Image (cartoon, rainbow, N blue to C red; front, top):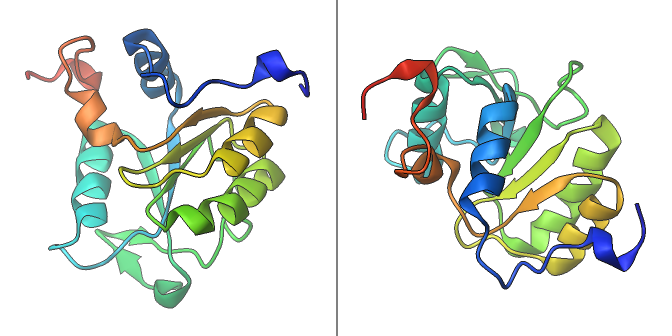
Length: 156
């Protein structure tokens, strides 16, 4: 899709239906910028998403070959070698464009920039290749908003 109508206005709030639809449909999430440090926000998000039932794949070149919470860490998205539904990004806004290119290359369906991560060029690139895009939001927070009950019928 390359028409202008294919692009979202990321200055407008995302609808509850849009966010819930993404979180209900994805199963495998590659987290670019995952940290092994339990005091880091990315570690907590990885933990909660994994415990909620998502198939989490940590991506961090400095930690490649190690494990985070028992999950093998990969050097890059391309090194994963299996389908990834969503790429969640814990990197700088400047790095999002390169991650968007990699997400397109591996055939991901969603590009999600964590709180503080926004790059409109990256969003346009991803959307022009059919990916859904969310920026400056946290999937862990969105999971537990009142509009959507957590997966696996867990209590709120």
